[in-house]
Image (tube, rainbow, N blue to C red):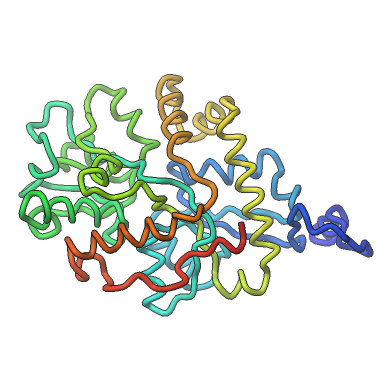
Length: 326
């Protein structure tokens, strides 16, 4: 009954629609898997709060996941239509035979590496022999860190440090318990950590990218199941239209940051404002004519410096992204 009602509201029952714009989905559900702990959670929050899914005739079903493995499992089991991955992870999936495709950018290089406020560690090069927290080894942030240590400091951080892989809240907790010397951290957690007075930013991903001489291309990309996108192109276009509307709201509406920040336990107004302003500067909602070339340049530089073993592949497959649904 709910599906029939949505179809009726969208004009799909007994109504011929001559104008193809704006994009309209088929009235069904579109599942989105995402991390509930940071920036990724804001677009689905805004889409649901402002009924943007209904505007474009679909029902967004958010699937929050606590870790990368759950994300990967959902994609490989066809348990979601849309997910968020770094472009290198898309390449790894394609090499493994999992047919997905990047359909829109989300963020450029926004995250950080954090250390205790009184740590003697001054640069990424000082992490040799230390305990380092990371989100996951396939994440491009980690590849960039490793590449920087290899090219600038003469060692591979993977082999020269004790690596703790885990979800961001776990890594934050381990830092609070003094069980890590440094950790990668989502940009949504960084202002809060700094505000405690116990931690400081050792390096930003953007700074590491600049140190490597690479362009500031998007790294986190909305990704669709290829078979689903081929079979339901209007659904994908409708999702992206809702997503772009959500980004415009996030760029102009301060209250949504406060409201969703409260749900995320971000209650310090200064922390929320810092986080909001950083994301607004880093978010990208459309591929442009340079995006693929910039990503391929980044891949080539990382591959030449770090090698196929670090990258997990020797080529970035054709068709890892497309602008056809924008």
